[in-house]
Image (cartoon, rainbow, N blue to C red; front, side):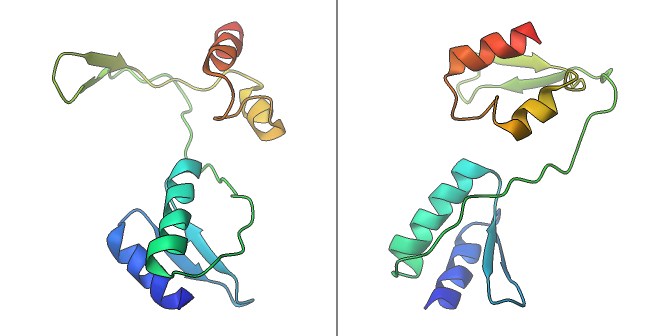
Length: 120
């Protein structure tokens, strides 16, 4: 049932990658912690219909910015009333370590995290 559920999940969401390790462990890779939570809930309730034993997610960062971009990017909201301009730049020194140590998390209070980011 689990393997069939994993196949259905990967068909329903193109951002999901399901891997079976030699040890028999099933790995579900996605686009972030929230995406994985939703995928595992769907797997458990809709696709496999069995209870799952889950471990904490492991987040791997694979890309980095080495210098500030000279290109300004533009993104518009769906209703086209809001525009967001941005430029990529490297993270401040010490921020990656603080993320790994848990001092900065996605579940942290938004204002607390924003204050921390403004101060560094």
